[in-house]
Length: 90
Image: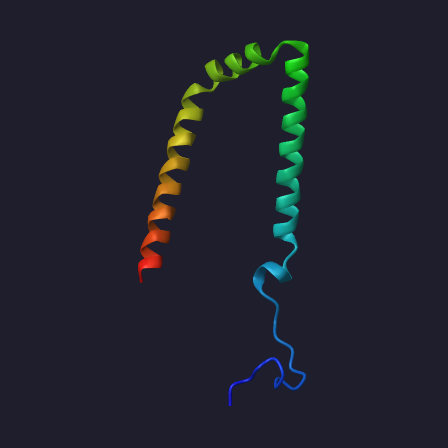
């Protein structure tokens, strides 16, 4: 007989991976915190009038890295999305 929520007779099932580990919650919190700090820094640069100069300086110093990283991210997202579309058809 298949066990349902009413007929499990006190058996406990293991939690899922994301519910059992708090590491993913820590990563999400660190990401949100760093994003908020970045927004405050951009606002500070805007108030001081150095935003455009700073962005141009970062772009000229790290142009090759930023272009190659963006190509890698777009390529990975495209492959992932094609896998999602392929999986939904099955």
